[in-house]
Image (cartoon, rainbow, N blue to C red; front, side, top):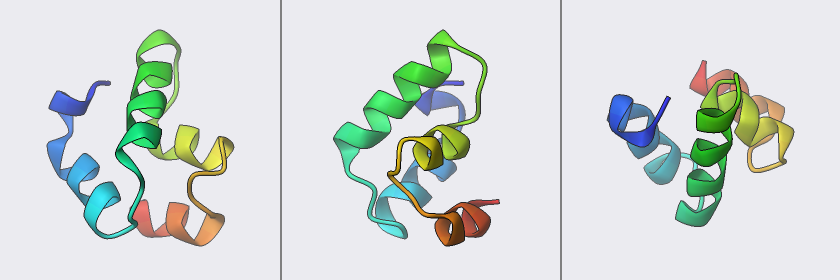
Length: 57
């Protein structure tokens, strides 16, 4: 998954959850190099909490 494949998700994460761009870039790089979804990576690294993760899903 890359940022271009899910622009609405990236926009939601930036605008609604206020995830910093650098954090999103790091998480996108991680999901591209391994199996994992962007929201789960953001949660695993502490960029979003469990309530925000539920909101994304």
